[in-house]
Length: 525
Image (cartoon, rainbow, N blue to C red):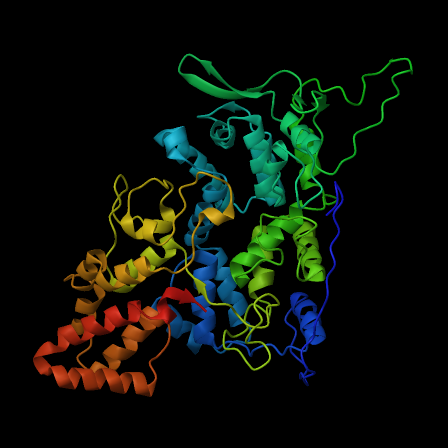
């Protein structure tokens, strides 16, 4: 970097040459990843079996574990397109909208502490209903950027209630919908990117007319005045202009018969929205494609996903371009984007490494272990142990992925990294493993009480299965979506024999607790 100029230099350092067999191709994604791996002399891991696929895709698409009956039905299905049919069925389930509404509520900051109960719920419901109807994402983004009207009637306008300052709104829009962080350019030129203070304040100018108006008990977002902002360092008044767009040249000496192209009368957010969702925009489709790729593969093509800059280039530019093109050509259909990713061979690659890819974590030669989100983990505990959790202020049987209020007090969710929605950064969610999580799963009264509950899974299975072997099979399908190995089954039977016939309940409570604490349960793999 030098002054306002940056440049990147990328080098590929291949391993020793390996003979890679011809690999099957499921869709356009596979050859683009394979081409990069061939350059690096990395051989990808094999394809996952049906047990691993159903568990992985259930957790990734709808944040929910498959039931034993769903696993058995999938394994029994002999049709060659059963994985395609499974994905389609998941995208049609109500849990899909619940799961993804929760994730986008984090980014768009559905914050009850600012909005109040009624408006925060209305804001969340608008997001959820957008996923229920599979609203094209360009329309979704446009409705956020241009939102105006009473907060109770136009839920998307709550975005500007949460981001009440023009600079906050400009930074959040840029980060969420374009993947670009411009906040540090408020005070100085971005040290690692092209953005100067003038760029920041030109984006800021789009939102200076936007304000909260109160008429009696009614609160509304309205836009009045000029879309201008003042650079405090230079003192110059700047007109609204999207990122990367050169200011128009105005000939001040010419007779002014028409308004200057720099005139900023009226609300300019519609122009911003049109520029933002245009196929010619270099960031919008790529940002969404990159975010979804990161969710399903464990790492973005650009990482972090919301730090797009010249000095943080994509690891596979051709792949990112192809995903963005697919998203654009699908008319910004999120379900079609998900379908393309999860039906690729790359998504269905095993997490088991080989000699060539054991150190590769950015080229998608193997699946990465990913700890599931806090809300998904809580639901997994409840589902497998057969006892729902009760959350303050919510009805019975509410699942954690349905909690629209991030301020609900809950130690488990806090410990496992649920975000507080104080920023629009992906980094606010903590998906790292720590000792507090390990100790909580081992010693939690929440887990213990569900495990021993008379209406819980262990009690039910003890009544339903008199034969220990069949009970073990059902427990493994419940917790891990697979059958036990002969070694695993033998160890459990040996443990049962040691404790004696009168300790059957204790044996299988021990088994359930042990399964919940395995890496295989905690991680998607």
